Length: 160
Image: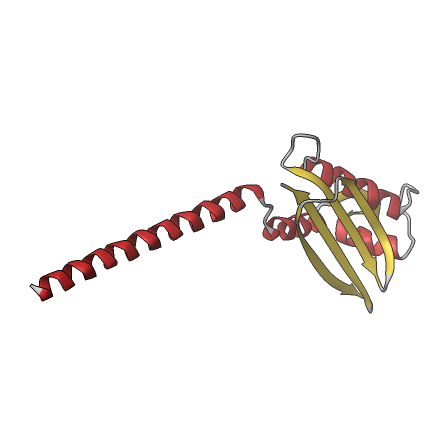
């Protein structure tokens, strides 16, 4: 009789443990799924930086259209495009155009704002932002060098 009662108590305890673990797993899943839908992932920002560095601009030098990375070097060296436009102004307008087409920061959008900074040897080449820079943010950075000059790109997107 005593063994039967003890077995029944153990079964009830085991059942309660299973129920508690199941509830904890459901709560964890709810929060993780909700976060994934509303947060911007850092890999998106990393891929964005990698992508825009390869984007070909309309600035030509030595009969060759420059990509954004090459245009950053031209801007740092205070050079102009073959058509006389200042490389830094072309870089700024190109990056603004790329960001506005890639990240919708209008009211009602998933994203509230963005910030892009390009530095070289402690000098600030580009510093642009738009929208509200608050709430959750995800970002990425990319470092590279050329001719002994260190360049750093910092990009952050703010969203829900």
